[in-house]
Amino acid sequence: MIQTDVVIVGAGPCGLFQVFELGLLGLKAEVVDSIRQAGGQCIELYPDKPIYDIPGIPVCTGEELVERLMKQIEPFECGMHLGEEVTEVEPEGDTFIVKTSAGTTFQSKAVVIAGGVGSFQPRPLRAAGVDEFPACVHYRIKDPGRFEDRNVVILGGGDSALDWVLELVGIARRVALVHRRDAYRAVDASVATMREFVRAGRMDLFENAKVTKLEGRNGVLESVIVTDKDGKSTSVVAEHALVFFGLAPKLGPIANWGLDINRKTINVDAERFETSTPGIYAVGDINQYPGKKKLILCGFHEAALAAFAIKQRLEPGKKVHLQYTTTSPIMHERLGVHPEDDE
Ligand code: FAD
Image 1 (cartoon, rainbow, N blue to C red):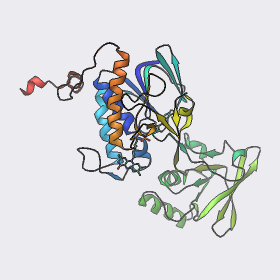
Image 2: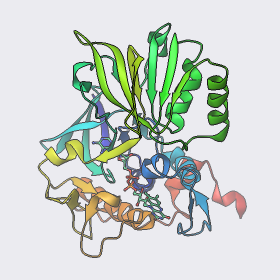
Image 3: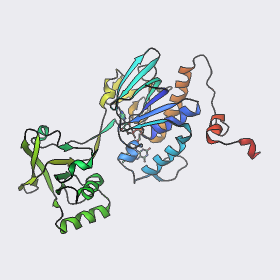
Image 4: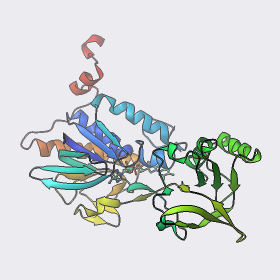
């Protein structure tokens, strides 16, 4: 069991900045996110789009903002647990026992929920028979070796779908790509290579088409029916279907933690950003209070005030002093800076 001051649920921009604000007050954090990369919406939804309203940074992309935040929190050496969903948060005495889908357990003195619009989950394939072949329909690939010399159908038109096409042509017996449009949301070079493979007869391509049915026996997939926009159906031999329809947010387990929830958001007070359960705080897009705006800079402010509230909770009766980073001993110690050297 990992002991810590604070578990932060969500590694979006607000969860990451929460690490910094807690670190400034000498508090150690562990961050958990269900996706495999830190950055939340900035990375999942708009890594290449410009953001113009981060104070002091006239413009940066979603990805650049996350890189900068990761650099900014480096000195505080938080634990980062990616690809794990927080499933349970249970009070135990003055602490909380926090459990994840990967079996990690934390005991923490406080919890900050920075869950944004929820945990990102793969969008499921909806087609007749899909529930009969759970072992043959894949949304995440852990072991590409299992597709060696198998017939594989890949669904989607984004980078993940195209990356797996390029990886599996030559490894799988046959690859077919099925995309509901003929334009792709993937790197141009990947699309060009894929089209080259099709021209060379190394794979099959179905554009403006959908998989409408899965067929097989005893849970073993044998083929899929691909239907184009004119209603024409083709049977394609496939032992595995790899589905990359993108990720959709779901409030998920947070809804079961006994908090005061208001239409997929958590009610907090606007002074401490504490939820209806003392010791559990919520910052960023997931919280709700009068005047709430779902903006990154608002989430940063919330993270600063939540950190002070947590410090006060952990050290009752002691005044929590405001520290400017310019003169903060913790900051200097963590960055290895000796201000007297500049004098
Ligand atoms: P998120 O970024 O949503 O991150 C939450 C994280 O929590 C996710 O990674 C999720 O997987 C994780 N999570 C949830 N539940 C669990 C769980 N149970 N266990 C583990 N992990 C969990 N804002 C601006 O200020 N300026 C802009 O210009 C701007 N442009 C935008 C453009 C687009 C296209 C979009 C979609 C949004 C934009 N926003 C912008 C909004 C901004 O991205 C959000 O306000 C911000 O991402 C919220 O950050 P967050 O950390 O609260 O949540």
